[in-house]
Image (cartoon, rainbow, N blue to C red; front, side):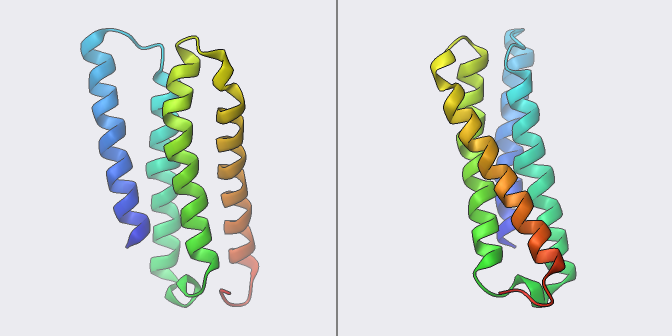
Length: 119
């Protein structure tokens, strides 16, 4: 449920931001909006579906680490990417770090898929 609850919160944030962009007519940060919805909602939901269908694999610390990696990646990437796309180029390393957190989560997910049981 933690994956789904987090996905729902991040989806709502993403939708509010999409409405803000539409109302303001400023779509410069559309890529940040897309990243938040993809990493924060879609990927988090896929992880939640997997663990829901495979409850034995949701035990242990690795699924919690996966949740943490993906959550931090989405929460850090979204605002830093919004600012980067609005000209704050100094935030590029933070966006890159968040991207590598998301990648680390994807790698951990693949590991969990291939482990005989969750650890």
